[in-house]
Length: 77
Image 1 (spheres, rainbow, N blue to C red):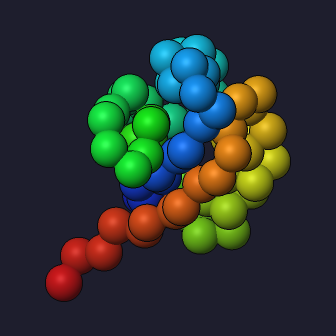
Image 2 (image 1 turned 90 degrees about the horizontal axis):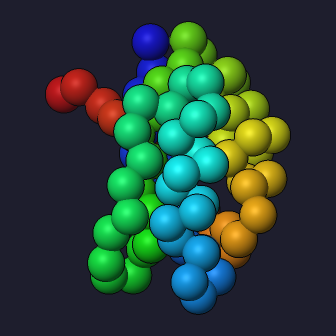
């Protein structure tokens, strides 16, 4: 299982709606509105890195109101 945090910037005033929509996507564990340089932080999981990439590109980035994402895979050192 591959896990990642996805940091999301949204259009002004869209963070709550983006987090709500994303929270319903399969593979998304949690989606929270935050303050600071990012507007929403998502924790997601997938079977493989390729599946995670497809989740981000084909589903999360397609949500209306998102302007930029940064995917941070979780590593266990």
